[in-house]
Structures are given as C-alpha cells and as structure tokens.
Amino acid sequence: MIIVLRPHSTPEQIEHILERIKELGFKAHLSKGELRTIIGVIGDENKLHAEPLSAIPGVEQVLPILKPFKLSSREFHADDSVVRVGKVRIGGGALGMIAGPCAIESYEILDTIAGQVKAAGANILRGGAFKPRTSPYSFQGLGEEGLKILRAVGDKHGMPVVTEVMDPRQVDVVQRHADMFQIGARNMQNFDLLKEVGQTRKPVLLKRGMSATVKDLLMSAEYILSEGNLQVVLCERGVRSFEDSTRNMLDLSAVPNVKGQSHLPIIVDPSHATGRPDLIPAMSRAAVAAGADGVHIEVHSCPEKALSDGPQALLPGQYAALMQDLRKLADVMGKEI
Ligand code: PEP
Ligand code: MN
Image (cartoon, rainbow, N blue to C red):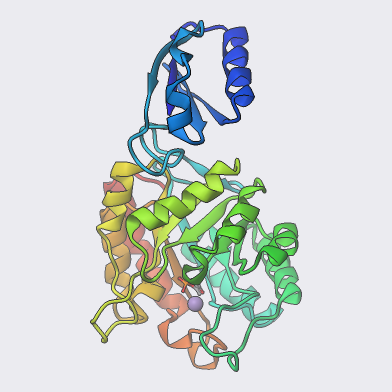
C-alpha cells in the first residue's frame, strides 16, 4: 500500500503517520520525491484495508500497490534509482562497467587484469573468491585470502570491488572486504541469504536465476529491499533454453521489461549468457542499446590458464576495443561511463 502525502505535510505529521504504521505492526518506507512524499507500507494489505488511514492529517490518498513486488515497483518509486558502489554510480544515466576474471587466482594475475580493464574504462573490478562450481572437484576459489587480494588490487587501481557471496555465513567476511555483494544465479532464491544481505547497507548485484522469470527476479529483490537495503542492481545473465550452441539464452527483453515495472537499475552479463567470446561484443552493444545500466564482462589476461570460465573470457585487448564501441553507444543513449 502507498500513502501519498499532501504537498505541504509537516515533519510532525509525517512522524505521526510513521508511528501509526509501526503501531499497526507494519514496516514503513519513506520516499521523498521532488514534488511528492510517499510512504510505502509493507505487510499484509488485507489487514490494512480496515484502517482509516486516509483520516490521518497530512494524508492525501491511500492506494494499493497492484504488483506483488512493492518496494521495487515503479508505483512506489517513479524515478530511476541510482545505486552507489564506492564513487561509482549505476543507474539514472550512469553505466556500471564491471570487469575482471571469473575467479581471483593470485595477486599478480588480478593486478595485471585490473590494470588492463581500468585502462580500457571499466569502473568496477570483479573476481570470485567463493565460487559456485557445478563440480565439487573444480577450483572452489581462494576464500578470504582471495577477498584480501581483491581489496588490495581494487585499492591499488582505485576501483570499487564486487564479489560473490554464496552463504549467509559468508556475509560478514565479504562485507569486510568488498564494496558490493554479488548474489549469483544459483542463489537468486536463497531467501535466507537475500535477507542477510538485506540487513546490511552494502549494494547488492542480484543475478537472475537460470530458470527464473522476471517476476521471480523482482520478488527476490523485494526480499533485500524489505529488510531495509535499497541498494540493489539487477543482472540479466541468460536463462536455460533448448539452444545448445550458447551457454544460456540472453533475454535482452528483460531490460526494458524490468524498467517498465521497476525503478531498480539492471545490467547485462553477456559472458555467462553466451559463454562465447565471439558473441560477447555484439551482445554488450545490444545491451547498452536496449537501455541497460551497465555491462558485466569476464576478462582474463591468459584465458587458457584460467582456473574458472576461461573459454568465455575476453582478452584485455578485445575488452578495450569493445569499450570504445560502448563509449560511443553510451553517448548516443545520453549516458555516461
Ligand atoms: C559469475 O559471475 O562468475 C557467476 C558464477 O555467474 P552466474 O551466477 O550468473 O552463473
Ligand atoms: Mn564466471
């Protein structure tokens, strides 16, 4: 439910409304726009219908939110949200260019790759320390040692860092070292994990599950938002299909689809979507043209020696060439990198 306040409602009136909502056992989220202040009321709407909320001074209108996701809906927040990762902005016209290897392998390798992607124009460094591998015998990541390397390399190159968290028990340690949590496709509906990162105030990159609908993705974002963390960036990374010449099938329509329904930024990961370096440049350009708020790409200085996802990694030179195209496209789209 949304409570729309009168244009000149006083701070005392707003405080009174917030207290009343709390008293009734609901959560209130205040959103101050330029013209309007609105309050999102979260809880079982049926119980609220009976309350004469529109009788409270300062209230202009009480409206139901028709979508099953509330705080992530455009109805709750009409403008595009901007998520800050360190000094980098994602959304509202600013593109987040996330790049780096699939896994953190050593300080030297990450340092080399970070220098190259930064020079090409990437603004956020990625690298996995806890890796969700299909096989338990594959490289599982360096754990906390990897997080320390990521932090040190990010600081050296002046880049904020994003890394995956797979389990609620890892949230503390990841939070200490990284600027942004990544929740991977396999964990998009790990609700305890969503709630745990929702309790923090660090931005979250939430990837679409491989068989999740756009609505499922937004409902998962809702878990994070409803805990009080509004800093969520969505990521389209392809879904499973019958097509077997690509790793997944990139659903680019998810970008305008999400934007129509939600204020949250959405970026695209063509690396995991296609699994093919020959397709990544075209899909990255298409993503920016479709209105994505950024692109997430795996880059490795020596893909043949990579411990994870080597075959889909772009070489630094390929990434730099792609970034030149993306800068031109960003210009056309009225966006900035
Ligand atoms: C990754 O980013 O390395 C990753 C494992 O991605 P996804 O969760 O999309 O498969
Ligand atoms: Mn990967």
